Amino acid sequence: MPPSFQWPLPEASTLQTGINQALLTGVLVEPVEFRVTPTGRTVAFLELEHRSLAKDLLPLERLELCMRVVATGSLAEQVRELHPGTPLQVEGRLNQQRRTRNGNLRWGRTELVALRIFPLPAPGIVTD
Image (tube, rainbow, N blue to C red; front, side, top):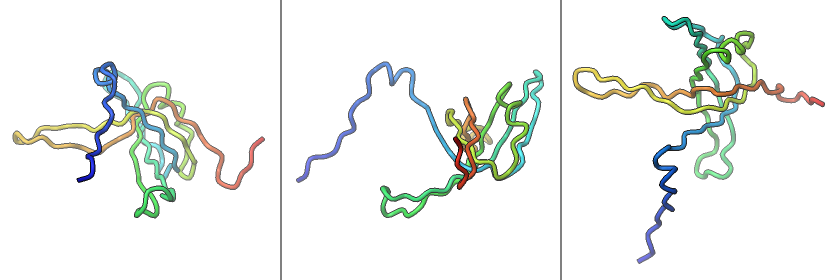
């Protein structure tokens, strides 16, 4: 019988604080949507589409996803001028809203809460 695989245990400090970091590149596919909270804070919602080849993830051939990105405060103001088709790199944390309806727990859509957003050069454009 082959030995069973066991994941290495993380350090205790990692378990207590948790690690939730995400980096995603993609293209903005819809105009940025803005809202203002009751406290006056600006929130921006972006739809980022990612497509890549999955050479090292057989049997998958490609990866495709559309992720909602949430930016708040000054970061939300910085994305005001972005338009669909803009390539972006987003660093942040994953979040999924929970709701209880009729006593049942419901999970909402997974979203990427942005800490940093960087516009990238368009494919085929060389920058110095």
